[in-house]
Length: 220
Image (cartoon, rainbow, N blue to C red; front, side):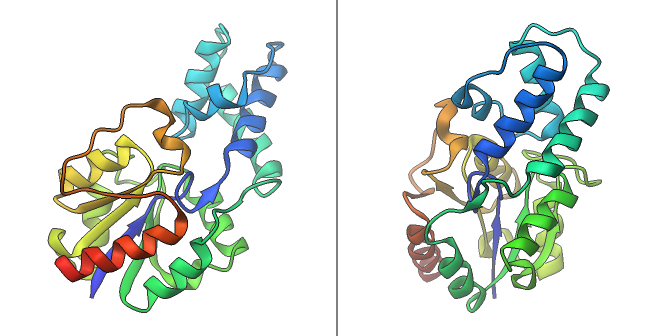
């Protein structure tokens, strides 16, 4: 059976407003004005610590990073599901894909909030494993987490597809020798650094991810 591994933020769920609100709450707690939503979104994708570090720099704050990160986690716990929702088509796509492939999640988001989101949307039973950015495998684009999921699923690089929304996901797949499908609708593409090869896939909507997976499986 094929293995399909999904990123979370910007791929399965639209969490941009809750992440931005939590980030801005941290800045405001240090007396700085909030940053625009789009600017915060461009900082997302490499884990909470990097997000907070980038936000502090953008606000010109010389605050203790560990303190700021703790404040972020505290604020985000209260906002985790305030506005975050699955992208259109994702529910059906996951149900259909679970019938033809083993599913897993590989995200740079910490494990605890990742699991809470999956539980809230009823997706937890669909996934063989969930690896967060605070795991011993390191954060993407380190391929160690993806390689671990391959081993768990007894999958080869050729039978593995990573679905994500950013160049971080693309680099992760390439380093592991796996296929990649980029969710073009997600916010990881906002940085404008996406460069794909001709054999790499793009999905414009959540519905299209299912179509890509079927086409990928037919050709793999």
